[in-house]
Each structure stands twice: as structure tokens, then as C-alpha cells.
Image (tube, rainbow, N blue to C red; front, side):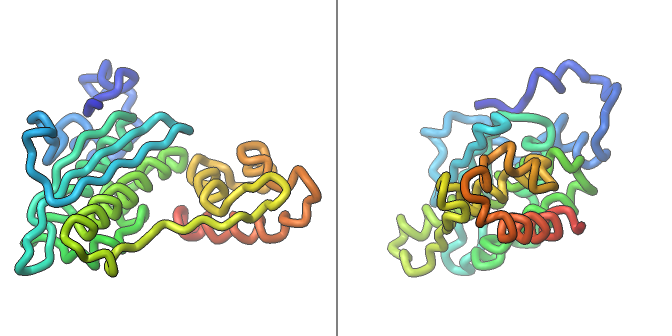
Amino acid sequence: MTNSNNSHANQQDGAGWVYSDTVKEHFFNPKNLLQENPKNYKADGVGYVGSPACGDMMKIWIKVDKLTDTIAECKWQTFGCASAIASTSILSIMVTEKGGMALEDAMKITPQDIVNRLSGLPDKKIHCSVLGDKAIRAAINDYFRKSKQEHRIIKEKSEIICRCLDVTNTEIENAVLEGGKKFEDIQKRTKAGTGCGACRPRVERMIEQYKMQYYGE
């Protein structure tokens, strides 16, 4: 796992850069990157997520202030594109600035929160920011497990939407995040609705819901 991507690392002068200055700063100068061997870093919680669709993988380590129930430190390593790296970098600042974010608040961070702090991302890269919010929740849940606070764990739930092909809401959400904005796009990516077609109205409603949630459309 690394904090660079060959397709972007060769643009050391920023030529042809299509991202905001904030993304550029956090890609070329990532904050809170874990430089040491992870085995030597004593974290209270660890979260790992990956997206086979785009190849991005992310790991986050957190230390928790037990007295205030806030995130005292957040370290990370990410393998992926500039968006994935910048998203993780800015997220590590978001959860530790101003004395540290409360765990309950950190669990509610959305991809749009991350995108806003980055001054925007290209639509096709929004899905990279989703790794960040999922990774921080995974790290906090890991802390809850290790500290015997299982009642505070929040689980990601999936529901089968297309019963013919067992396509879940999570797969549909990820397809929208990867750029699909029409039913035909989602159908091509997930095969939802290629059976009896009864799920199509619900899938179309979900597409609109996710477009509004992540893109404000």
C-alpha cells in the first residue's frame, strides 16, 4: 500500500491537473500519512476498505481520547488515485482538528462532507471519497469492539433489490458513485432489471436518491 499513483505521480509540476488546488495540495503533500511500520503503531482502532471496481484501497488507524470520546490521532495509508489520496488526507484533518471530533460525529461523516472540504471532485471520482467515510466508520467500530462497546457499533446494511440476480442496494449505490446516472448505466454495471424487470421502478428511484445525495442533482 502506498500514497502515490503512477498515472499522477509523473505530473510533478501539476501540468494538466484537473482537480482543485486543495486536492493538489493533499495529493502532493499528504497530511498524517503513516510513515512507520503499521505493526509498530499502537492504534485503538483500524479500518480497511477497498473498491475492486476502481482499484483504490484505504487503511485508517485512529487513537481515541477516552476521557472526551474524541479522535486524538488519525493515520492512514492509501493505494489509489489522486482523489482517493487527497480524500483520506483531508479526512484525517477533519476528524482531528479543533481538539478532535467526537466519535458519534465522525460516524456521521458523509462523502459530500469530504468533497466539500476538497473544494469539489470530478463526478467520476466521487466514489473515492466514499472509501474515506466507510474507513473511518470501520476504524471506530473496531475501537468499539476492542473496548467492549459493541452496543455502539453501526453496521453497514445491504438489501437485495433485484431478486432475479441478487443485486443489492449497495451495488446500485456504488454504480452511481462510479458515474452511472441512468437506469441503463446501472443495468450495465450491475445487471439489475435484466431478469423479470419488476425492480426497475425502485432502482430508478434509488438512482435519483443517490444522485441527489452525492451530486446534489
